[in-house]
Each structure stands twice: as C-alpha cells, then as structure tokens.
Image 1 (spheres, rainbow, N blue to C red):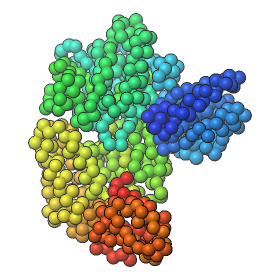
Image 2: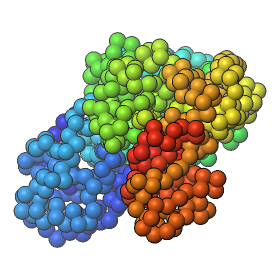
Image 3: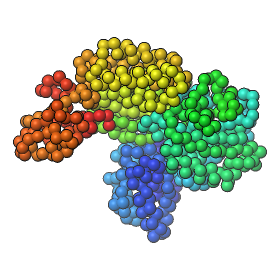
Image 4: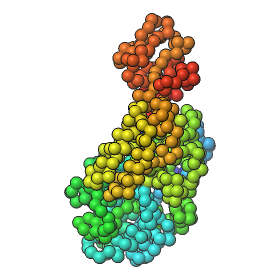
Length: 620
C-alpha cells in the first residue's frame, strides 16, 4: 500500500490514537505545534491523525514535502527536534529513522507496501476530529450518491454486487441482512452499530473509530436509508473513551453540516444517531444481548429466531452490523462495488482488517486481501517471530477461535478455508505464538476468559465451561488423568451443541483445536507430568548452573522467599523446595546461569539458555 504524497503540500502528521498517545505522542505533537508556529515561511501544516497501524514503532511522525512521504518511527522529543531542524528546516531527511517512505526504502517498508488498504485508506492521513478533512478525502460522496440517485432496493443490490460479508465473525452476507430487515413488517426500524469489541488483544474497531469515525457514521446513514430506518445506535464499550469522544464530536459536526439530522442534504431523508456506552461485558457482543443492554436490561442473549431483523430493539426490525462492516459500506459507495469485489476470493470478497499481536516482530493494525496466507501475514507483513524463534501457531478469532499450527501456515485467510481446519475468522484478532508457548496453557487462558464472561443463562455454558476449565487447570498442575482428553472433547461438543448464543457455542474452540493439533503437548502434561514449553509453573524447576554462575549475588537480592543462598564470587545454590517459581531470578541473571527444566528431566539435556523462557515463567 503506497502512501502517496499530495502535490505541493507540506504537512507534518502526528499519530494521536490511543497507541500513539500511550507511547508518548502527545508531547511530540505539542512540540511541533509550538515550533511550527515560529516558522511560517516554511508553510508546514500540522495535522493530528489517528492510527497508521504501525503500533510496534509508535510514536509516529509523517513528513510530506515536495519530494514525497517520510514516516518516522519511535519519535521522542529529541528526535522531533532534529526532524524539525534537519528535515523541515534544512530539507535533509533523517533517513536512519525512516520506517516507510515513497522516496527511499524505510527499515519497515514491507509492513505497509504488502497491505491492500481500502477501509484504512484514511487512517493516519486525515484528522479524525475535523469533518472537513474527511470530506476532502472523499468522505460522504457515497452518501450523496445514494441519497441523490439510488433507491433503497438499488443500495441493497449494490451491496450484493460488491460481495460484502459481515466482518463481525460469522460472515453473513450484508445485503441479505439489510433486505430481511427492510422486508420485515413493523415500524419504526433501527440501525445498530456493534462496537462492543471484547476479544483479548483485538483493537480493530477502536482504531477505526479513533482514526476515521465518519466512515462508520456514513455507513450507518446509508444502512438507515436502505432498510427504512430513521434512528441508529452505536453500542460501544466505555473502556474506549477516545473513540467515544471522537464519535460525539463527529456527530455534532455532521449535524452542523446537515449530513445528519432532519432532511439530510435536502433529500427528504432524516436520520439520527445515539451513543450507548456498555460496561464491558463480553457477552454483549452477541447481538440479542447487545439489544437487551441498549434497552436498559441485563445483557443476556435470547433464543433466535426471531432474529433482530424481525424483532430487535423494542421488538422492532433492527439491522445490526459491526464497525468494520459499516465502514466498508461507506467505501463501497464512495469507490464503487467493483473496487471491492475485484479483491479477495470468489466467496470472500474484499479485504480484512486484523489486529496482529503476540510473538511477532511487527505488531499492529493491518488490512490485507481475503485469501492471503497465514504465512505471508506473519512473515512478510509481521516481519517474522520476535527473536527469530520458531513459529508455532496462530490464534484467530479470539476466545471464539481456534489455534492453527505452523504446519498449516499456507492456509488462505478466508471464511471457508479457516472453517475447514476448525478455526474461524472472528472479528479480526490474530495472535502469533512461538515455540515457548504452551498450547495447553493457551487453551486454559481463553477458556478462563469465556467462563468468567458467561452470562450464566444456559446450563451448558454456565456449568460446562467451568468443568472444562477445571480439567485444564488440573492438567497444567500435573494432576491430569488418562481419560481427560476424551472428557474435554465430549464436554466441548456438548457445549457447542447445547449453548444458546455464540459465546457458549464457540467457547470450546481453543480447547478442541489445541487437542486436535497439539495432542502431544497434552500427552506430555498428562502422562509425563512435563510441560514441553516450560511454562506451567507446577511442572518446571528452576536451577542454577554452577559452571556459569559468577556469584554476583543479583538473584539473591531479587528472590522474594530467600530460596537462593551462597557466597559472593562463588556459585550460588537454589533450594527447589522453597522456590515459588516466580521467575524473577531468571529475568535478573545476566550470565544465563539460571535455567528452567521440566520436573524429572535430566539436567544435562535441559536447554541452558535462560533467556528462552519468559521472565515470569508464564505466558507473555
């Protein structure tokens, strides 16, 4: 994805999404704001932007001049001053800090060039707090086209032509959902944007709302026109304060310019949007639980049918789409359906946004065409595994998804291909794991999450997931029994078949896929009382290698239970009966003298590289 410079413009952009602000972008922005005001002859315009997606090298500053685009990474105040003096003042780019450029080759060039950005084309380019910036980038052209020249039926037909499927996880054709809602009897009708992004490690919706909120709002208005609704709701978790702030500002600006409200753009069509903040319950990502929460009730799912398209908010027909789906709607009507349908695979059209996280070198937000392989995402875009460790697996779909082994890395990322191997697309989280990840522990982590987030309404989810979790916990503590895997598989299938909503129906997926693809790790835990990844604390032992211990004493000072003893400048001793396996000594030792081995494993066959285990002895 080439970031093309705008002719004859001299611009400085600073990324001020949550990731950039957390990394220290605010002082950098304030610095440029102050200093650029002192040099008007250079005529550089400072723009606040959202998330460019390169979260791994925030804060990010982009300079656009007559030569092209230069994107600088990890910019602190010292670097900002040099960029001001050398690049903006003297016209000499600081090439060593450039992570991407269309003039030179930046050190992280592949991260952007290998993407295909349709949905994220404005992210990191426009000011998310200025509606004029969105309009200049092509915003609201699609809405104007719809209101001026298309009937609601033609809008739905255009979506059908584009091939857009819902990006919330299930991949249901968007045009069908809209058609069902339009054809359902009853009034009024409602549009709901599901922005309740609850998957651990997922931040796609947050980044879009912080970086390009108008695209989502434009998509909602088009949806309202298509289904015959005059009122919409954005259900967003309160943990996203910046996204909420920018949505409120965007709505106010839209009303001022008549893109929202009564008689929009003189078309005779009226539409209003309200924001409802959720308390962070994962189950409220399920559409019927979400609707209950909007109505002021406890967020609990109900049986379907009837579906929300038939009976939604207050029993009226309601069209529910997630953030990414609605933002794609705006793009389809701005750029035309052919731009979208010509990308992707035969059954999975367009692109998909992923939150790339875990043990990958370049973590962040990416947009790739449907059908790209897992390997290309991890290695060509993600830069491979951090520390050049072996690639082990990826988790797609968050707690509802499955763990895919490295042996299936050529699998295309589309709805059908992932389903064939027991995984799902999900909303877009993609967690990368290396060989130091214990797959039993990963399954336990995700199942613990879904167990805690279960609303408790149906028996299979309420009682079944804790039973599976207790079994997994016992296996990780070295108390596993020969029949445990059969028990987990039977419980998992029963929970999938008997649960009321998607939370319970998909909760067993991480367990079932890890048993399917990493059964040898379960066998090691159960039969050998050994954790091959040396992560499960009850199955590992910490020891000091006398040959490499220098007697520096750092480990004795950090140990909270005084399990380490000895004399300075002589090898120390670690009492395994006292050690609580906290891992502090491991992270402190500078000489690789402390190792972890599985209980019963011969010391001489243990991996003596202490740094191959995480500092806490647990999952990072």
